[in-house]
Length: 135
Image (cartoon, rainbow, N blue to C red; front, side):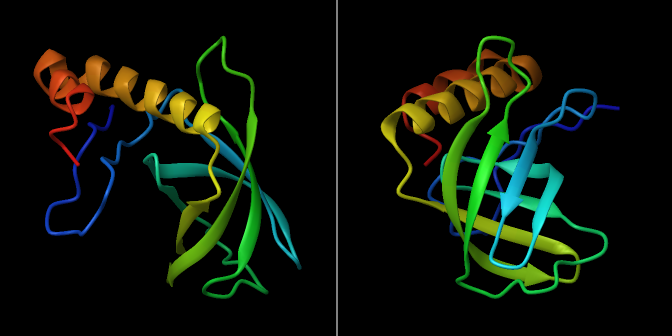
């Protein structure tokens, strides 16, 4: 069963969030001061990611900086590095905001998000996204 891209209603988000396809998920390597983890992403936007860590990170703190290597399930996009700041920890769910995201990285994220919108939500949502009407 595939999940559909969604805009988080009622959330004050700057960017549209999509959920990766279950069979072809987005993987992130997270490096913090006291941990290194590889996790699947729950949702993704140009501004950040949300992920679930069943065992919870020890040593994670709100506003803590982490290094990220993101692997998108697109054949011609190599894994790329970003930095992020932990913005929320709720039970076993973590929200990480990208900081200092290069234009190249942002374009790779935008390309993946646009592809997910085309795959799942049809051309109307894709066009709204490309026209900037979903921000």
